[in-house]
Length: 229
Image (cartoon, rainbow, N blue to C red; front, side):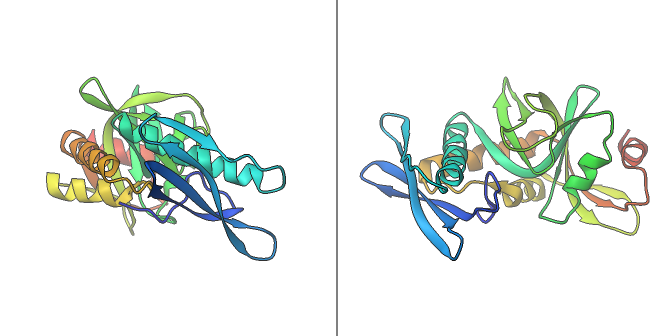
């Protein structure tokens, strides 16, 4: 599970993490103050009361801290509701979502750009949540061209650059490994992380997963249709 990315991503801060203290998850943010980096405590999540509190500060740091704080709270409460973030672009075609996951530079934003005429859930992070026995992709408040859309996931693709476009179906174990390596949570709370791991591996067992080597010279959706139908 990836904890190095920042959700949501901003130039003003480079790291968000949590520590447990007195029954609370305290949210710490590394913020750029103009000359150097400074660690600030943005607020906390009260685990027993299921509440959160932001430490309001008047000044230039307030917006950056608030965005980091809300993003972390979003992850926490999403995880409690059987959901998780995956570092991916998401595109809706024919009523279902296609998830293209991979590290920075793997082609997620390119996939979104080449999906003209289709609803783009996100070009960087997708919210995945279990819903009525299936797994559904949702947009987030921070990423995506089309807001407030969702669709059941029909396939997941794990991107690699290639000289030609090809697709290899992954088995359950490899699918679970890929989903977990591309999922993201910076909330260090063992019961929550255990639940997210369970949901992520469950999604890998249900959703068809493929290793996708993609060549930019090949038409994207025509290639998917030709290979996978």
